[in-house]
Length: 457
Ligand code: ARG
Image (cartoon, rainbow, N blue to C red; front, side):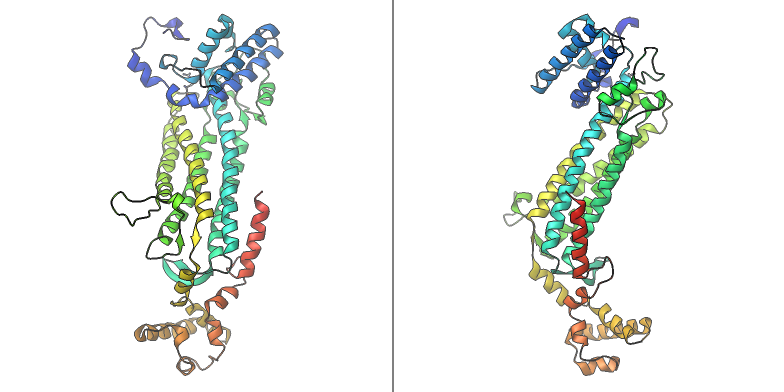
């Protein structure tokens, strides 16, 4: 099949070479963005008198017909036409005749493809932001049901201090809030029109870039035509925000995998998000959480691959840049899938309060309470730490916990310990009394939840 750019060529490439150079296998995902971009471009050409009204409306009609076919899945694409832009242009010419060839006046595939990518990402990021909010809502709801559920808080994966389980869940809410803000911030740089930059240098036709930008819903136009066609920062920013979001999801996935193990039994994941084993009938595996943890790797990979593609490129467009798409599409699909799965997983997980409570009681995570108690009686904290450390050692040697020690024994360690110590050592009190701003005290957690609710629709 002849190429739309075949004029200066004396022979055509072999099919396998075309196959290697083509992007249609993946850039067909941009079909509606490409049609939208073309429609805005042709309206602008008509308005500026670069094409006659008649020509512009004929082309517009052709593009509408292609859109109709595309939504019915009736458009076929071929490697011989290389990419989505040339495939659609060929279809247009087939649809309305040679006049279709006027569409590309004052435009290049370089500004065209950049426009498509901006349109695509703008829409996808807006829906990703919505999905983050749904996930946040699921977390707030679960947290609110568990404000007073006691849980062991960890550092170094060793029990550290008792916390509210709701507080733990809310930590993820705030990570997601920052993720959402990063995507929102990135939208500013996605929301810019490269259309009209031409191949690299602008055009001699009296185009109106502001008009086409407005028709496409972009807030701004690129100020420099060379920057417009060679900038992929907006995709890099998206990939980097996506990587951080995946990292957050991966950490929660890891925790949920641990929590649902026989060893912890802190939560139970719903059957709908678990799978069985083909050999071991008793198994219930947290596959979805594991997959999200695993898919984090491919998103990081997509970021690194594009950073590397771009690092040595001279201005302006280079074909290397065709490699920007698959990683972007893959990241969009991975984020959308992971966010939806996670929302469902959190909504349906069962929190095993009994197990959590047990873990908090049979434990030394109230040791800090005792040290703080001594410090509040005027003993320097460093000394208090030493006293309690010795008591913990004594307990370990005698197989008991701090609250099991009789008052006489405690008084031997320090005579300022009184009967009220037993209340102080209770994990419930330990959590409740952590009233410092942003702490795990129940009132503080409730306060966080109220603030959080105002941040999601
Ligand atoms: N398929 C190309 C891409 O994705 C479109 C731009 C091609 N431009 C060019 N001058 N060959 O980057």
